[in-house]
Each structure stands twice: as structure tokens, then as C-alpha cells.
Length: 137
Length: 137
Length: 80
Length: 80
Image (tube, each protein chain N blue to C red):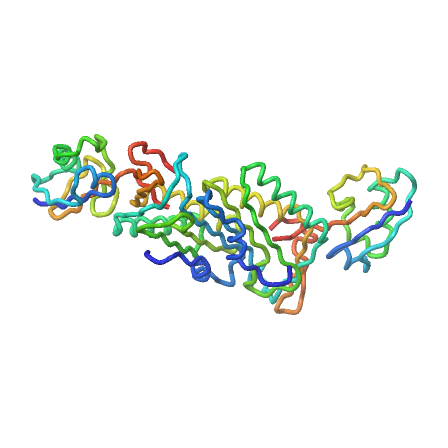
């Protein structure tokens, strides 16, 4: 979780000659959020539960869309602007299930995985993303 | 169009620090189609029109989802099993427009771009994909 | 007037040609070109109303052509 | 019986603690733990019904606890 995400490596995990479609989602740290200039984001998690929840989400996507090939990586710790915090790769014979499964996994990870972001801004302030507002990204 | 698609390079084309989400679709040559073992696929196109149509599709996606960062590559010629025939990369501040734009582009390219596949099978036969059936993949 | 007619993929294979020049009457339409082509050897393998592009844009049978237009017969596409 | 209570992110910051051991009565519930925590210094910053996980699964206020359970207070998540 502490080294940069290698997308090619994740894609390689799902390679199978029966697949005709690979779908990838990469979440990266944005330079601005709600009008404030972001310096970096500190990601933290309830690690044991996050791992369990993510495993369950992947299993659900596999069942729901019959997608056997799903790879996911989520980083924790301090991430700079432009760095990838999450990458999801799905592959399937056809494109619709690959894209649907990818979308399901990112939506559910954002909804359920116990992971938090502490944004540090250029003006010296910091903010727990979503805390208080309960507003989903 | 004749060298392998470099996904990292396409992703690099859309990198912008204002973006928090990158979405990728890669279409690859499958080892079987409708129960037949595929050896390779020959892609051909009405190149001038395909380029124009793809440019228009990208413009439509940009307008529809307000996604400024879209990169696309489509290969022609003989492709082996597992090789990428198309890659689409979109990036946006938020994930929903990035994923929607990616999906729009691949659906429309498959529906409208004048590109054809001649599948060569292990049993020595060959078939123009979709020809006759008019069935969309 | 003269137009260029292009054939691709399975259509080029059925007809045995990739392109031809065609002399048509003034205010000739896409439909006129389709009828002319339907008389070619191998054209029975083409659908009665094939997809047509004029100057690289999809067109309708009633569209009127101009001298020098490029008319393409587009088999069912299968890109991606 | 004894349960372990975990706090994360903004909750850990408000309370100034990341975990504690809590002694509760037999057949104590998630709700009992939430009430006990609401008496801690800094707990006013927590919502009245925070999201709770028991042994790494989301739980309800009425769920009955067992000795040794791990109860986690989950702030609004923001992964991805």
C-alpha cells in the first residue's frame, strides 16, 4: 500500500486470452477541492475491515456481472497531487460486464470501505473529507 | 496504427492535476468467438472516414459529459490473440463523467466507425465479423 | 457527372473490386448509385439497402450527389 | 464483559484516543457502547447515531455484543 500503483502490473493480473475487454479506473489526488488548493492528502483506514470489505465488494461484483478477473489496489499514507490513490482493473469476454463491474467496485468502495482522507491545503488548513457534511464524493 | 498500443502513454496524454478520475477501456483480441478458436484478426477501415467519425464521437463525448481529456487509439492490420485493438482513456475532475464518456466513446465507435474485422480460425476458415448477421458485438 | 464508388471488407471481397468510377445523370442520387452497383457481378451478396457514406459522412438513399463525390458502401461495422 | 472500542480519523482526533477497553453488562448492545462513548470528553463532535462496525462488519444499534468483540466507530468514509 505504500509504493506507487503500477497500472500495467494490475492489468497484467487480469490478462486472460478469453477476455476481449479490459476496463480500468484510476483515482488520483486533485490539485483543488471545493475551491481550495490541495497540497497533499493523507489516507488512513481501518485496515483489517477495509481489506475485508473490499474483498466482499469484489466478490459481489464477480457474482453480479460474472466477471472473474478483477484486480484492485488502494494506497494509504501521504499522497501528492496527481498520485493514484486507487486503481481497479476488470476484464471479461465482453465490454458491458467489464465496465459494469469496474463501476460497481469503485462506487461501493467509496460508499463502504472504511478509509478516510485528510486534505492539507496551501493556506495551512486541513480537513477530513466528507466529515461533518456526510456528503459523498 | 501499426505499433502496439501503449496504455501508459495514452494515460499520460490526459494527465492534468485538476482531474481526480481516469477511466480506461481496452479491447483485445479474444482466443475464441462464438465457439470457434481464433488465430488472429485482420482489422481494416475506411481510414479517412473512420478518423473523421472517431473525432466526431470524441467531440460529442466531450460536449455531452464536459470531459476535456479524451485519448483514443485504434489499431489496423493483423492482430494476434491478446493484442489491444482499441484503447480509450478519459479523465475528469469526478469519476461519473470520466466513466460515462469512456463508455459513450466505445459504444459509438463500435456502432459507427467504418472498421471491419476478418477473423481467421484454427480450422482454416475465416469470417467477416457481423457481416450477414448485422448483429452488433 | 462522375462519382467515385468505394467498397470495403466483405463487399470488396464479394464484388472483387475496391473502387470504381461511375457516370451518373445530373441530380443523380445515392439510390441511383446503389441501383447501378446492384447490377455488378457478385452484388447479390450485398443487402438491398446497404449503408452508404457520401464524402465520409453517412447518407440517405434520397441524397442528391455532385460531380466528384466519393460514395462508399459500408458493410456492417465491427470496430473496437 | 469486556469489549474493545476503536476510533478512526476525525473521531480519533475529536476524542484524542484511538482505542479503549470498555466493561459492559451481559447482553450489552452496540447502543450501550455508543451511549458510554457519548460521555467521553470531545464526544459532542460525534453524530448521535454514528456508523458502527462489530468485528469488522457494519452493525446496528440493537445488535447484542459478546465478550472480546471489537467495536469500531466509523466516520463518514472517503476512500477511493
